[in-house]
Image (cartoon, rainbow, N blue to C red; front, top):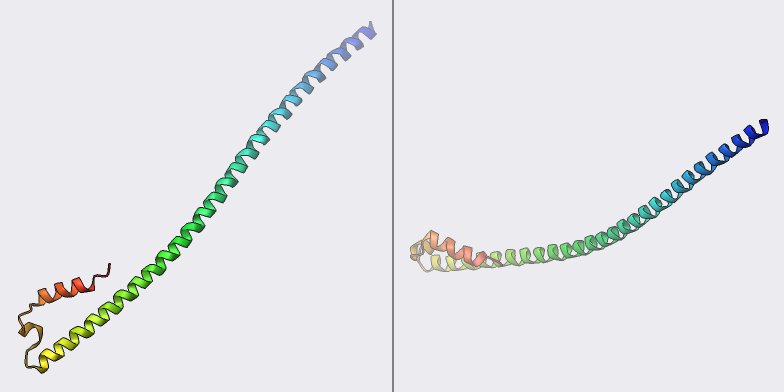
Length: 124
């Protein structure tokens, strides 16, 4: 009778171990699947990061080119304003030396002169 109890106990214990083993195998399979999914997500994120870094680099290059172009345009505009100012000062000097009282004496109003200067200074 004792052997039957031991055998029944051993049989129940073996069934419990089989059940527990199946649970552990299932947990291992789920963990492996989760790990593989996370690995794929990480690889995708790294690929997106590489694309983003390349795009950032291209944008930085473009920004640098645009900044250089803007500086060139600003220098050109400054040179044009300087040249126009020198021409205006020369013409004013010639008019004064010939007895005309400058632009105002020649019938050029300040607002017309301002508009002319504004048009000349526009460097687009």
